Image 1: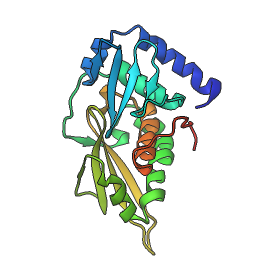
Image 2: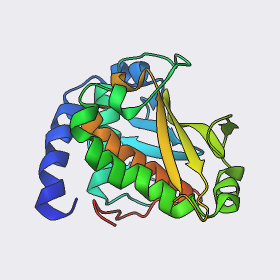
Image 3: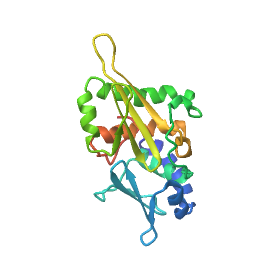
Length: 212
């Protein structure tokens, strides 16, 4: 998302954000809100991000301003749409989500195929990239990790290693509470951001675009 393509949806969600009670958003997403400086503290995996209210400006843990429309849009949608539903412990696939079949092609190309291409022939890198992240190793595929991307938003990344007979493959599972925070259309982008975060060892580009 760049220029007008990102600016228009960003300004739309920022307008809603500015009209929503910050204490309510904090309560329904489970995040901290400091009234003294009008700032949300959001943890993205293991990094703290600051969201200013009502401006919607976002800063990383080094106080660098996030310019990426796509990151700002997703974080503000999360704050605006969160409905206070905790983790259920039940995993679902993207197709189980309302609208998942409609957006599956986009989700597959942006996330599942990307995961397979990055890690399907390099399980050691997959393991190393998760080493410093609070996560749970699960008994799925050849190697899989479940982690909390944002408060109450849980993903499981699964890899099947490629060999001479089969291409590498991957999958992504969600806790069944996911629709109380993101819809299917958003998730193709949110999971893509999560992949970038993990691949870059916790560093999100300040100007991350829609297409990489």
